[in-house]
Structures are given as C-alpha cells and as structure tokens.
Image 1 (cartoon, helix red, strand yellow):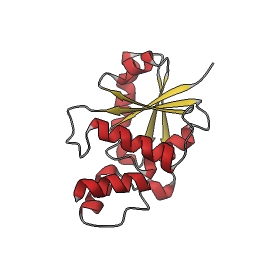
Image 2 (tube, rainbow, N blue to C red):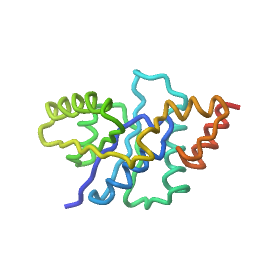
Image 3 (spheres, one colour):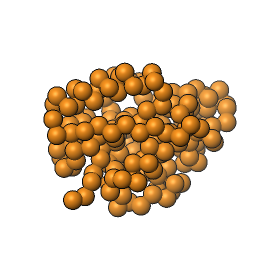
Image 4 (cartoon, one colour):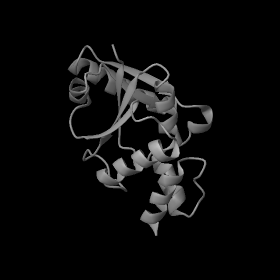
Length: 164
C-alpha cells in the first residue's frame, strides 16, 4: 500500500527548512501532499494562488522534485478531512526548536481526537535549516538582506518583486 502524507502549512514563503522536511519525508513516504492553507489567522504576504505558484516553482524548477512524489494543493478545511480525501493516515510536521514542540504536540493531539487513525510524524530539519522561518526571511528581504542561504531562487525572485 502506498504511503501518503499530508504536509500542511501556509508556506508564506517556502524555505529550505520546509524543503528539508519534504526531502527527509520522501525517504519513507511514497507521496507527500503539500497542503497550502489560507486560514484567517494570519496576514499573508502572498495570496494563496501566489504561494501555490511559488511552491511549485521552488520544488519542481529549483529543487527538481518528481511530480509523482509531491503534489501541491490548496485547502481550507480540517487537516483530518484532507487526510480522508487523499486516503492518508499521516500528517507530516517540521520542528525547528523546542518552542515549536508545545504547539505541535497540542495540534497532534487534537488531530488524533478528530481521527484516531491519523498519526503525526515530526521531522527535524538539518541544523543549518533549523533557524530559518518564513517570517524572518520576509524581514530580511524587506531590509534588502541576502536570503539565498534560506530559500530557493524562484522564491527569492517572487519576494523581490513583492517588495519592489
């Protein structure tokens, strides 16, 4: 049976930290659905359509992932409902630091209450990517800083256009 995982997030924008989690997940998961949320809780720099395009460009043009292993979708539902839609019982989440764990642990517990068949798998990005956050990447580019160590070429171009 094919193992499919849902990797939900806002990806505003995608970073090497996200990409690191995807690479690690593909070592034991057959297909990862990158699920881009447009929830009301955040002020986004990019629209959901822009984020989908940026993630597509970053993963398939810059990093050269195979489309049979990675799919990008939009969602505005419960992640557990998305799992049901794609016949997945795995939610993939990235952890950067201990500070992420409390929120992620609570979220994992709630997802388990909503669907007892779903497991959340936490992956740590490599040390050099653990400090990267979308928020900090946006702050650095806004102040004309160099972000090439934090995200892909296509993502950098999209960020530069946004801040012109």
